[in-house]
Amino acid sequence: MADTGTSILRKLRRRDALTERRVCVLVLGDIGRSPRMQYHSLSLSKHGYNVTFVGYLGSTPHRDVSGDERIRIIPISEVRGIQVGPRVMTYVTKVILQSLQLFLVLLNMDLQSHILMQNPPGLPSMAVTWLVCALRGSQFTIDWHNYGYTIMALSHGPNHPIVWLAQWYERLFGRFSSHNLCVTNAMKDDLQINWNIKATTLYDKPPAIFTETPVELQHDLFMRLAKTHLQFQACGENAAEEMDRTAFTGRHASDLSVTLTSGRPALLISSTSWTEDEDFSILLKALEEYEGFVTAGASLPSLVCVITGKGPQKEHYKKMIATLRFEHVKICTPWLEAEDYPVLLGSADLGVCLHKSSSGLDLPMKVVDMFGCCLPVCAIHFNCLHELVKHEENGLIFRDSQELAGQLKSLLQDFPGSQGRLAQFRRNLQAGGGQRWDQNWDQNVLPLLTGP
Image (cartoon, rainbow, N blue to C red; front, top):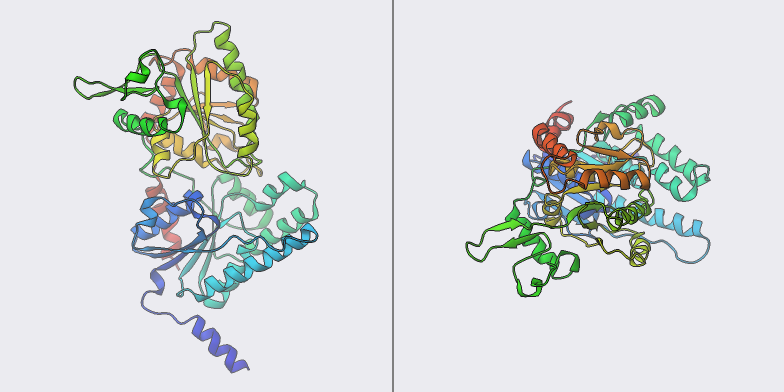
């Protein structure tokens, strides 16, 4: 029996000439909505690694990922568990079935030198990944985006037994990893002090696709969006006759050049996963106050507010939006393809972030992308936000809807002029430049792969 076990283990660990150039990237979630893990995969590919990308195929990944010959996507299925009986039975059976599915997928793939998994979600992927790495001799790396137990606490409460169990689980299996990455220095310190886990800070940085959008590309995107979203259609007496004009841009018949239109509304954008750590009633209340400012005679532009993303609370907020009666503010909630999202960010005038970290230790990637596009941001306050948003330098930090409304009024009162604070924040972002994802990854992650 011992000889049989040794033989099986030897077979599981049998290496070939390509083993050291194979890395598995794992997310127990939608690959298309996991940008950081997509960036990991692309960076690995650029350095000659063959990537096996494991996750749910819900949204379409970026075409750079799906079109990369070195990146092979292995889809796994979302498991629901038994839908009858107590809720705990549904949850337990879901975890068991997910564990079995993931174990078989990881065990049956070619031997990988490293498995890089996202946490959260870490239950059950953290334990399963550790077991497979132990059996096969692969290096186990966790990329800590947040803590799963703090997210669970949002819906169950911090003292719920399942939250305690999730915290114990993350602490235990987190210590079994070979390497750890995290998204802030605050999280790095917390992991070290409270869980005795040593991590490397890998700040989210925008890839090269996030940049300011030329007006011609803005026009092309707005024309496509105008087909399905009235908010992007041109207004005015002759709007119906002008076939090549949007609410923001127009193409001149004389020389076919594209320009931003005078008197255009300001384009406000906020992206979200529509989860409990983002309270969009704050933005809606602020927009109500902004509408009141304009109605009372304030010299402010009309607003088009675009809220992008998919998630569980989207329908709830869409119903709230439907009850609002605005004359000077328009709201739409489109789902954008991966290629269109950076184009829209690079076309916007101001970003709003309502991400409020459940742990107080992670940073919103959406703001990173906005800054890559030199888009100033108003962001809701939480403990380590200062590691990203510099108040009165690249944006503003607010604590409630009233403060946000005041910031919108202050920033847009000179719109679209070039002398106000909004324009100054954009110039600060343009001058700051900043490191991009590739350089950041090469400095912090590549040494973990090539080192002893």
